[in-house]
Image (cartoon, rainbow, N blue to C red; front, top):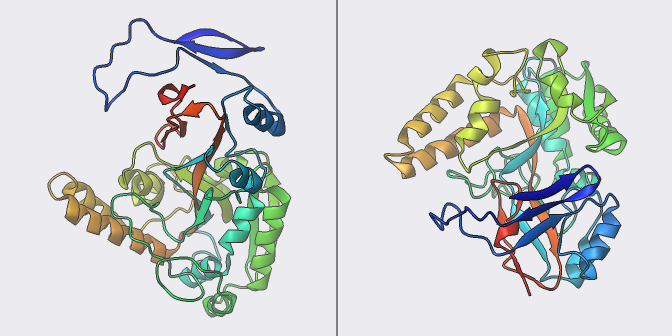
Length: 344
């Protein structure tokens, strides 16, 4: 429970004397007597404090630094855990040029997912894995599927296929359409925007970018009246359920229920996919094996329709001191389980 907190003081948690473990699986009893969370704005100072043992844990998932050397120097003290999320470019299926399936597929073939990972400073070992599909690994129904790649079609993304991308863009007959790329200032900013504009120009489009304050891209795209064509977004679910990926962001209902406030920023509606999702949800309890097959079919159906350019699945990364043991992460709560660690 909270024992101390203020604007200029650390957050201090202590044991709750009224807590009793009722289920180890639901909520096991914790080990630490005190957990203190201190705000340090400089990411390098945070890392040096943990390296020297003055602090015990730092989460560096989003500090914008490369930590490859840290992982090499302290391999047993850098931990990662898969997040239940997919980061993607949305392509507005109701705005030209992305009303055309071939135009959407062209962008999927053209994007270099590894380069975007580097531009977003997610290059630490194990932090981000390229993907071409909606479902992250580990989800019910996940089957590796990546049609938008050079080289072998073995479910893995190997690299962009620019020749095929250019051919599809020209076959779509949409290359005369101007495209505006929306980018949040703190999520890639100028570097990412310039890369995406360059790719679109290589495909034959008249592209430009609009850099906005953090969160503005999604806020604008969630209102269909703003006609946002393309932007960077992501979706993190609370539980490992495929329905939490499809229903809120890729179903007909998620758009038509309120087009002025929708999470379905691609404005995607495919009745066939909706039927697969509905069948999978119905089968989930009685026949999980059949449900997994249906989720895989729904995932493949969306991948083929290409309302997104799925980019990567991201892992959280944190660094612990030499005295920390039993380091675990919960993907549902987006971080390490502080109460399950102990120090020695």
